[in-house]
Image 1: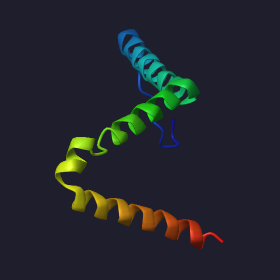
Image 2: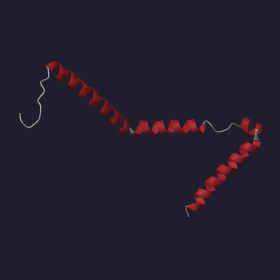
Image 3: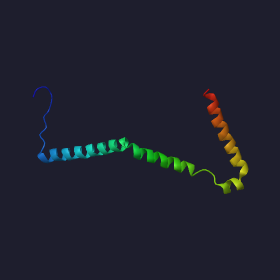
Image 4: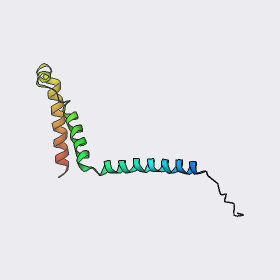
Length: 89
């Protein structure tokens, strides 16, 4: 061909290997899409994340041993929430 394109002759083994690679990549893509579409699993992941963040709440024993820092953090959090709520009006 004189238009500058080159044709490449590939062996059947090379073609089969390319097909297998494409199948594997397509399978990975389909699995990723299925995971994204699984709303129930994503909701469960979110719940697990919230449970993990809640586990960092100080225990009653910690509050008894260190009441002032815990009270200060609570007051700051309450002020922040109230400030955000009042700014919405």
